[in-house]
Amino acid sequence: MADNQKVNAIIDHAINRENEAIKFYQELQGVAALSEKKKLLQNLAKTEEGHKNTLEKIRRKEIGKMTIPEVQTLRISEYLIEVPLNEKMSYQDILIAAMKREETSNKLYTELANRCADPDIKKLFRKLASEEAKHKLKFEEMYDEEILNEN
Image (cartoon, rainbow, N blue to C red; front, side, top):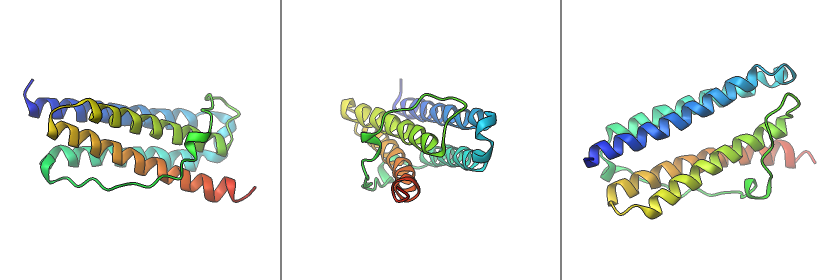
């Protein structure tokens, strides 16, 4: 497979993961007990749509020109247990599920970058990992401000 095809396959996979996340948040909107959280879930789905747009922008840029910012972490998600999806999910549970999804994606791309020999594809995986770290940080900040600070 040519390098350009490999890059496109990686981006396609990442877009598929974003589509899964969109579906995840849309399905949660249909859970009756979460109706008061519908706006949050809609915003989370829109965020994932934004991630897809970012991936398409990455596809159009030359990988060598991409910058990869270092993203801080509050490490909150590392101390939380993933919660199963159910009708009784609280706002806190939704944030935990979102953090865990982003954490898993970040770990996947980081591991793929570590295993990849091709410098361009390695950089692409590092960029994707950085994007997922940004998303996780956003949810950690929400959790910190709205859950931890309330307690």
